[in-house]
Length: 402
Image (cartoon, rainbow, N blue to C red; front, side, top):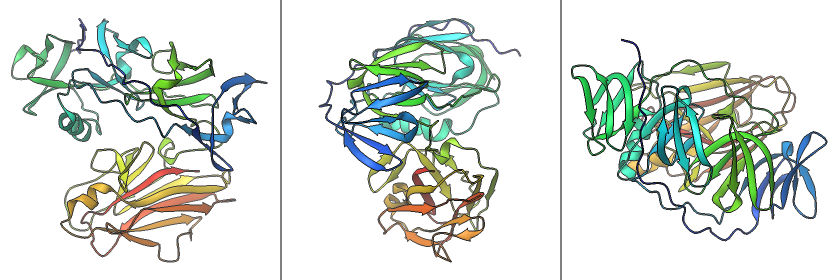
């Protein structure tokens, strides 16, 4: 049956930002190390973006991220739709309309956004944090072959989505025919891909995290007078974001490269005993949730279950590999056994974390590593079995970047 998507209707209550936290200086991650500074402006000079720190100006290409650590997240509004895009963006806002090709969402900071449906991976109407977490972990990691409506009882119905809104989710569903589920019974929908999506990254690409948890990626046009202007990749619209609504900005197209933004040339995974497969995850734990180490959440990084090996061709372009490594907090919290992982980094086959790697357990604190990779052609990251074998062997390479 052909896929139908029509009549996108009004969503639920809009997101309200909490009062802006004290701005304070930001932590600026540069190739020379982290520093604290006040961001005055980001402007274009000579065809490149420069960040004005008052006492000095630095190219945006030399910056990995800018973070305002004093800006905590606002309390999530679980009456508001959560939209997940195929490029990893997230938008929390009110659905105000749409048509067969797009859906219109109003975000309190970014304004009205018209999202092409081929960019949308899922829409959720969570009632609480537990529902949202389970939606992320069980539904987001893998694309379905057909649209799915997910009920609050966690029964899934496949079919062709026709409409979604405050009055319910309508479609043609297997075994039911034409049916509508109210927001009280439907947790959300998971959309099947309509085709490949090309995500561009260049020297002016910025990935912006807002205090409400939304993430927007696009071409950074500048920052001045307390407002950041971003041309969104997903919509080609320009969003003007008040600086006090922003908690972090990443620059994935400069001298820094997060490994989770790179495609490995080779992936090897196997298990010892367990039959459950845990594919490696970009920017998340292998179980499907966010990366957490030592109680801290990391937006960027790799989640790997032993045994996993990822090979990246570097072509002698990079100088240093940096990461915070350890066993993910989900393994620490299990407390059934002491989980272990042997972390290994190979540079053209040469071990960089000791001849036999670095053995870490759920009882060890996270470790920061900074390894020299100058002249390296091939880099391999390995999460190998430790004494615990498969049990809780959940490795995290947080903020892993070159």
